[in-house]
Image (cartoon, rainbow, N blue to C red; front, top):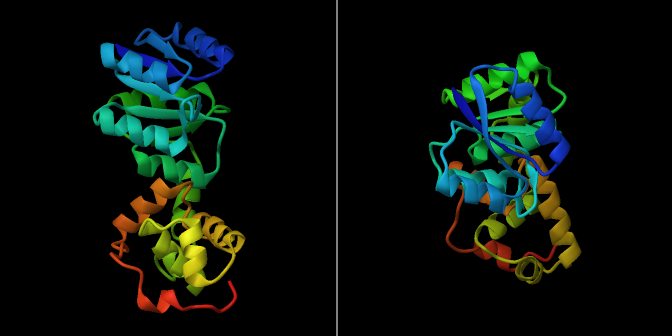
Length: 224
């Protein structure tokens, strides 16, 4: 029997899933949650074989939510069921620790195999998403994603991963806050990161962290 905790902030979605799974003999819904606090509360006191998780949850969302859950329950199978079909989002969530990723427009012949495979500690991706993620992760033959950054974007990337604020970077590079923010948005997009947590994971994975800002960054007043 696969015991599932359904986490979605829309009651109609939870009701629909419960009706579907009620017809499946080897699946049992053991709990519901409509927010991150409810997920945490349930998992502290109850066992389940699978967390079926929407990404847009009050109290925490996206890859940050998945990462937080993975730290607390490292062996919990997490299958994301979401409306987001962007490979950028899927890649970010999988890097954060999700075991599977499917979209809410999927058919039963996708949902049920995904549930069973992830509950058995396997991995599952919506059909078509795997290929898209591969192309997003390796967009051309030039190598790692960070090699596609401009010189200025690379500077901002390194300074952000050293813990500097937008204001600090603005002063150091002698550009406006808006310019630094624009570079940050662009580099996050190029690296398929949703936030600073994703960016730090990327930097660590590629051994790109530096202890101190290089001297050449300290007097680099050319236009952003």
